[in-house]
Amino acid sequence: MKFIIEKRYAILKVEEKVKVDLYHLIDLDSGDKVTAVGVKADGALNNLDVVDVKLSLTLKTERVETKKDGVKFLQVTNIFVSEIQKVTA
Image (cartoon, rainbow, N blue to C red; front, side):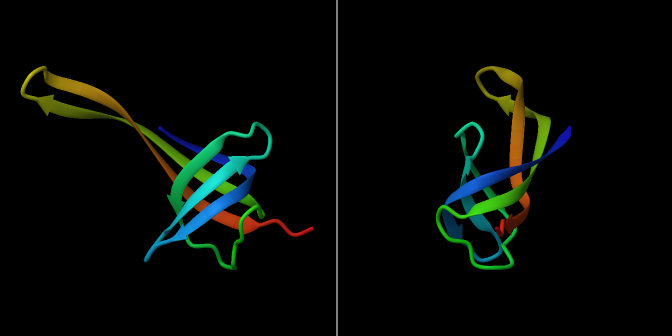
């Protein structure tokens, strides 16, 4: 199951990696923190910039075999920033 969330966030921190960036975001409505990897932004993003973000959430069930308990099924959630753009006034 896949969900797309489009919302406005404030950037706390951006950690630049080789192919993707790690974003630490704060929801402007609720104040909740989101940490997710995602595409590199086109322009420079600074701390406390307001950005429009498109988050892709994928939910799936994975089968895991353990020696002690046998087969277990785990719910796995993946979060990825598929689009990010700085809001201009």
